[in-house]
Length: 138
Image (cartoon, rainbow, N blue to C red; front, side, top):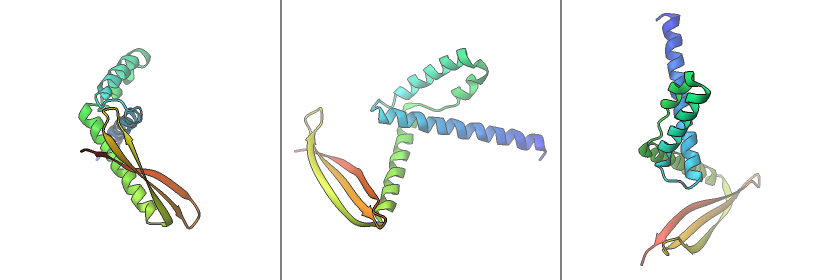
């Protein structure tokens, strides 16, 4: 394969990686803001409009960012799973830990059980994380 062909494929791969990374970044922002997954499509429209004004030659790059509701949901699920696995790995090193439970109600008046874990490792590094929220029906 010629150097030109290799450079073309490297550039294409770099663009794909960048668009996937941007998709994850926007999905994370949507999740942190508590917005519906469908907001990704609105954000993409905004980015495309801004790109057409600011840098029309780069608009094609922005159009490759996948922000459909299904993609945003999948990205958020991937990140959630990754965080869970990171916490599980970190918890293996805890020398001591405690679990805290709290009951609250959501906006629909459904009782919820919130479970937190706090652990400390041999270096006295403290970790405190929300494990889960369980709706309590009935």
